[in-house]
Length: 226
Image 1 (tube, rainbow, N blue to C red):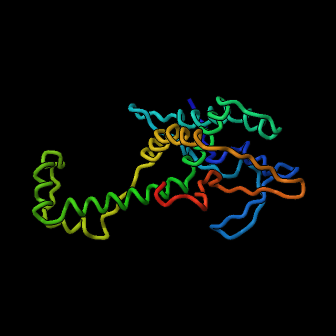
Image 2 (image 1 turned 30 degrees about the vertical axis):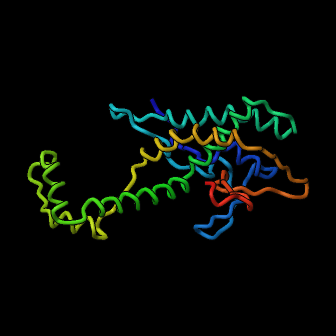
Image 3 (image 1 turned 90 degrees about the vertical axis):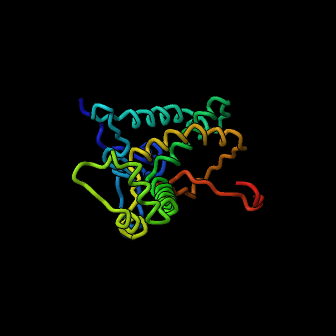
């Protein structure tokens, strides 16, 4: 059974709100420093970005479908807001979950969080291997798990951990799991906030980006609050 290949990390329907009369988006690409015009279907998309694999090795797009359900639940709420209609508490919950999953699903969030995690793991490794004796103790503890024919000395292990050759790479599956675990927790915080919706006049426009859900601290926020 085939599964969708193209996964949007910014919804097509959301992008359509920023399109012109021909349903085209005017894009500025920071990486290539160029402007171009393209369709929402070809914007903010990656191949199999939310694909995960089951224990039997079969691919599944359950995560992509889960995100799609959140989007579908939120669109009627967004339509009500666009018509200046009041939304209910349940509708606010649906929109809060949509806003949060949008914050967590984009490549920029994955890149930033992975960078922090990789630095933390590298620092923890160096603390764990503070000496050659520490390295030898780790080798002794996990000796039974070392594949046959492969050997490493305590000196080699210690030198490797403290060298630039030791690279930490967070698996994509871990990032997806992190996204799934965090989305409902953060949405609860949004529900506790006061919400304000703004609109632009007919002679002005909003702009968006490939990371449209962001947090900005108020100017008068206490330094003792997160």
